Amino acid sequence: MTERLRGEVARSSLAIDNLRAVVILLVLAFHSVLAYLASLPPHPFPFDSPPFLWRAFPIVDSERWLGFDLFCAWLDVFLMSFFFLLSGLFAWPSLTRRGARAFLYDRARRLGVPFLVVVFLVMPVVQYPTYLETAADPGIAAYARHWLDLPLWPCGPMWFLWLLLVGDIAVAGLFQLLRGHRDAVVRLSDYAREHPARFLAGFAVAGLLAYLPLALVFGSSAWAQLGPFSFQLSRPLHYALYFFAGVAIGACGIERGLLAHQGELARRWAWWLLAALLLFPAWLGATAATMDHPGSNSLGLLALDDLTFALACFTSCFFVLAAAVRFARARGPVLDSLKANAYGMYLVHYGVVVWLQYALLGTIWPAVLKAGIVFAGAILVSWSATAALRRVRPIARILGAARPPPALLPPARRRSECLAD
Image 1 (cartoon, one colour):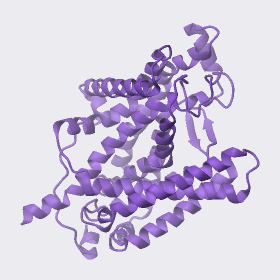
Image 2 (cartoon, helix red, strand yellow; image 1 turned 45 degrees about the vertical axis):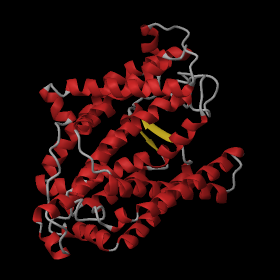
Image 3 (cartoon, one colour; image 1 turned 30 degrees about the vertical axis):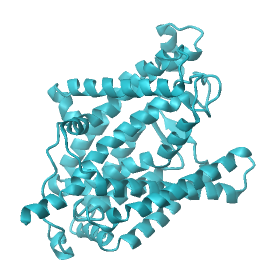
Image 4 (spheres, helix red, strand yellow; image 1 turned 180 degrees about the vertical axis):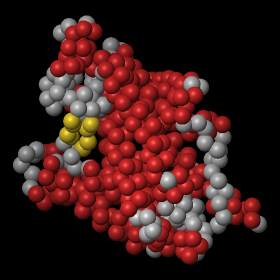
């Protein structure tokens, strides 16, 4: 009986562990199809001209498919917010187990070092095909001059790493400030488990307050960049909320909290799916309405667009969490390898994607075929390259060794027992 209960409560950690690997594949898919969006202009973006939109769309192909626009729109609604939420889940238990100093050392090594290496050494190589699309002089020396003349240092998808590191520094500071009162965070985690509807309703309201004001002031798509540090002006508070919500949800352990395998969230996954299916099209409709007359939209229409975005993000995030905890409990050697190499794949894949998209520019193949080739190539090359890099011990310390199966924890306990930890 005891072994059965232990196996039962370990399912949530296994599901979340699997989910963290699978969402990396969504990132690879997202970047693989960006060159083939039907909404892109007919020509590549100029390399030297503001607002440097090639940072988001490094390659522009003539072959297009509208389905990729819908796919990328859905991922843009929730995926990066979801990354922050997932990243926060394990922060408080790690701080409790290791202390703030060891926690920050590990996060600086795992996030800060890859950020610096990829941004300053790899990104110039990655973006060379982007320059070649519109270059008068394709030489490497000419490219170097144009690159150094840019008023910024492009960081590609690595912007997530420095923002996450800022979040980790903030939560470590909070951990130190709450010395003697850290049980307040555990109480919040326990409250989320015992009163999920109230907790999630408060989360949704906080999400609106965190996103709407900044989105109305700066617009939903404006970016700021200082050197290699970039972020979307409408979303810093939004991302911070999702990260710290993850901290609160995970503070008492995945199996014991809101994400318990037999909890309310997992049992109601179908309702979350229905909500996501309703709110995502609502956001698409509101966004389409704002694009019909850019620059002359009413404040009410802009607010509706931003409100539906925040709610679509919220419902999509918790649908994916609920479905994963309910169903994503598989084990196997391929999945284990993916989990072990997922972080390295995130760091490596972008250059593979850009160079493959550039190599396919001259082929008259359907967009779906091209995107499939890029996606498959990105998986194969980034997976194998990461597996090879992890054989080097110093690099393995950064990319991570294979994790053991989730620990088998005792069943969920009452609040007093949880706080005793």
